[in-house]
Length: 155
Image (cartoon, rainbow, N blue to C red; front, side):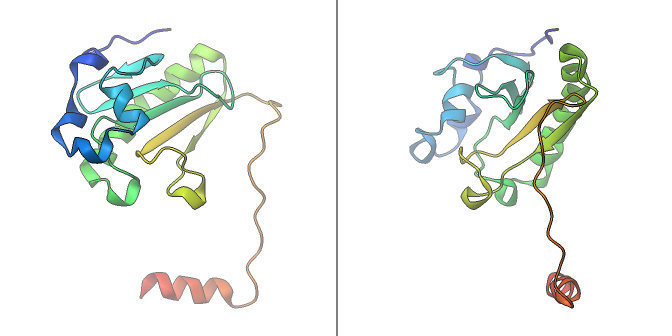
């Protein structure tokens, strides 16, 4: 299933509206500018979505802002709302296209968290029952640790 696109990647230059010297090497900005091809599944004025070249499962899609922001913490709230709206539009279509019954939504915020490309992006990863994919395992808090962390967050 293919979605109708509002504009072509190469015609949108939102990354050009910001400091290009800082972002000339960003692979996602190059995709937005049409310098690198992508398997595009969605595009509007603010967001681009394309298939991941190394998918967790078929249909694994990256949803990015066209304007360069490094991660969630430096992305304006209205841009995050826009990207989440696109995630909602796409997730059901992706599941239908690949016959998935669910999906994981992932974001790696910062290098330590596994963010490889320093451009804010969300992963829509379709899931099927018994697909063999696992999430990490949690570790219980030590005695008093949960309360201590909660208080630090609230202060």
